[in-house]
Length: 539
Ligand code: AMP
Ligand code: GLC
Image (spheres, protein in one colour):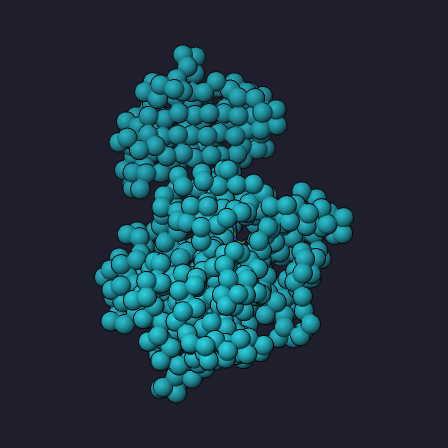
């Protein structure tokens, strides 16, 4: 890895910048280096300067001198606060570092992408295959009149789990009406029926699924090299990973070398948009219904935390635990073991985030909240927040940002969380313990980056390379988000998206929304995951 190691000194009216470039432990003595200095307060640029080869930046007056690999620039300046951007090119590759110089000290100003590329992120434990299924007339034709009648009857009081083919339809329609949900398949015969959908031509595509699969691939596309832990990893699952995703099995190895099972963990994802209809019932929104399979092996047995090198940890997947396994172990025991593991990571000061998903089973949901006392941060969408609050308050609503904030605060207080994040269609809210996390300005940067990512993904379906982020440039900020911002400015004294609430600081961001998204599954994961990683980079 190539790295820029700078040193900035102010001596009287002179500023001296020494830059060294390393490739691993080796000092690079023949790099091209360019420096741009910007006065932050006045926003004045000094002449751009560089070693002779960086022609765009070369000016005759100020040249960066290469003194055997110590690239030195001396200039006269009365600026108190300025920004130094250093570029270094070696073997045709250019890297960049930004520093902020203030009151005699330099601070590194990191860009979100730089953070993603340099952070060591560990993610565990849900990796699965998502079979994306079309929701259209062809699906209706798979059931007879009597079944259709039962579906319409069951819709009155949905079971919220899958025992029959009828329940799959009920789940899709309920999600079209009330927003995306995930139900667990309890009857293996339904899995057989779902597998047959590809023969009917209803299978649109196969994607990587699960928070761990989705977030790790995204980090890899953006230039990171994350590490995953998954108790179930078949050849088919492994093939869906980007090449710079690694796995602990144990020891950090390429995913393809860590295959542990023949059988894959598969979920079926029924994606719909607001124009779709099923049995003449019209969808009210874009979204998805997930039919999640259960597997005996799909439970974590965490690798020794002391052998893991991580700067940040993201946990998820507990919604698919079985209450009881054939060997007698239970979801509660697995969560207890996870807590011990989390405490081990916390002792090593590694920040830990738990990403929630729709969890219909109340007792499982309750057990998952035990983890809240031990992790630093939790993230979710507004429906998941509602599910959480319903454990103690049946009448809870999440109708607007004020209601959401009220519940976020209750949860943060109750579990002593350092950070809680909620994303909705139109805005994101972060609440964090003042002084114990990151500055509100940097949190906003992380949130804005996550919004760009979500917009780019919704717009173009997939992010294949870092440049695809530009697809978000044409997407505008949501009106709902802007209206909620005004409401908060009037009601809770928020300014520039920031306000204090007792021990907590709140950061609000109206976000970009694509009017006709190509796909919505996994958007929440990339929002929460990228934001947490970037915030950790600013700690
Ligand atoms: P989740 O349900 O957790 O996967 O989260 C979905 C999130 O994705 C929403 O809360 C929005 O923040 C974001 N999202 C959904 N649809 C769009 C869209 N059309 N454009 C931009 N962001 C979206
Ligand atoms: C849940 C589902 C998984 C899906 C993911 C998307 O983890 O189990 O199938 O890919 O959510 O957010």
